[in-house]
Image (cartoon, rainbow, N blue to C red; front, side, top):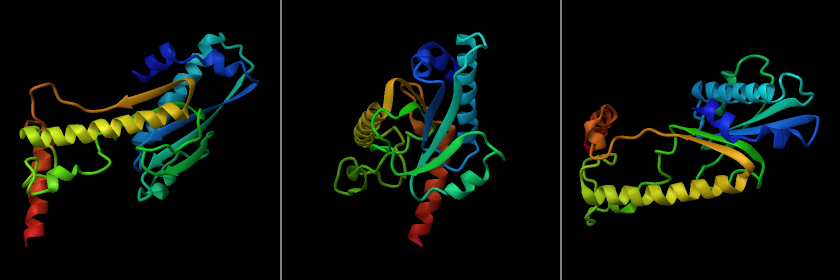
Amino acid sequence: MIIHAIANNLDMDKFCSQSSSQTFRIADFGCSIGPNTIFSMQNIIQALEQKHHENNHGNSSTILEFQLFFNDHSTNDFNTLFKSLPPSWPYFVAGVPGSFYRRLFPKSSIHIGHSSNALQWLSKVPQEVVDCKSPAYNDGSIYCRGIEKEVTKAYIAQFEKDMESFLNGRGEELVNGGLMVILMGGVPNGIPLSHTAIGKFYDLFGSCLLDLTNK
């Protein structure tokens, strides 16, 4: 999917016509500690190199360089992430701490943004679901099970606010003609999350946490 998105939607000729050396800046939002983020960056770079090669029939004099930004909260273990990088990686790497629900980079500085399995984590727990006097009080559960209507509405409202913040931030950071890749899990309409495998795990994990807090 990423290879096709880059092949069909990214105008590399526009970027590479500016000089004989072109630096592509790629950011992974919600990188965690790897190795998935490393695989994702490698896939994106390979897709860029492949398109560049095909566009120029292997005869381009433009040298591609890549600067990779790994973003996550400041509490993320960036040391473990950087230790897992392949030896002698031919790319320039930096860690960027901070919430991706705000601006993290200068305006028009990123060519490709990437986020995989991260945007399902909200910026905060909706206040209504922890207020025992609220009709959206999520008593006895640590997540949105998708069954209680008011609880679901509270989580949806927070998700919409967070997504708007995320997209506004990336809209400022991406260069004109850049690409944002978002990969997220989901469930079909009408199926509560609590009826899925991950939902059953959250139920079990949540019950353990509740037992610990009640002791």
